[in-house]
Amino acid sequence: MAATPTPPPAMTPQELEDQEQTLELINSELAARLARQAESGTKVDTKAIFLVGFAATAAQFLASRNFELFTGAAAFTAYAVAIGFGISVFNLAAYEDLKPRETLDTYARATKGATLGELAGTRVGFFEKNARLHQRKTKRWTVTLIAVVAGIFLSTVSLVLHTGDHGKRTEPGEPVSSSPSSAPASPQPH
Image 1 (spheres, helix red, strand yellow):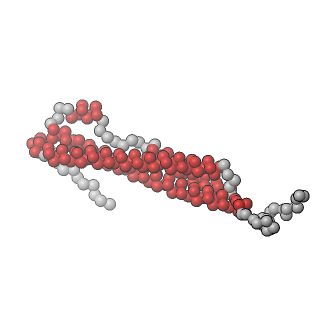
Image 2 (image 1 turned 60 degrees about the horizontal axis):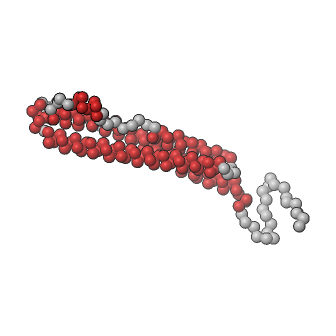
Image 3 (image 1 turned 90 degrees about the vertical axis):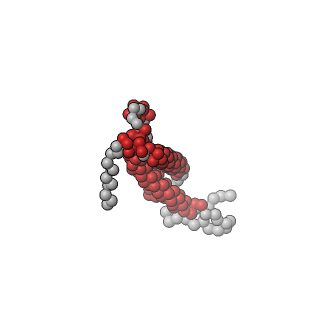
């Protein structure tokens, strides 16, 4: 396990003034990185919404068909897991970002260097909180994807098992295979 780095000692007002250009560069990089992080989170949300919609549609399709009971129930369970985890992806808390009023009230009277230093520290804290949130989102999205794939597989197996011989074509004069549980067909009058 890596040790948590200790923060450097607080800068003096003169050091802050001397480092203004560096702090501006750091702040612009951190702001851009937070924007990319939020965009990535939005993409995960979009993918989760798609998977939830697909799982709901697939479950409705399966429900409208005759299916084999055991694998059909397993497919419905997989779809339910996909829907539940998918919804939990975009129900997570919003990403942290600067609050305009609070930022103005806090830093309006501070020097440029002090403001840049504080903003950089605040953005780093936001990025770290957002990274944990993003990691939870992507893990839940992965579970959603796996559940949808499992649901599709189980639905297919369920439908194939149920159809069995029902979907086979026979040529005229060829005997129709019957399952052991069905009675022999009686001749129909023409």
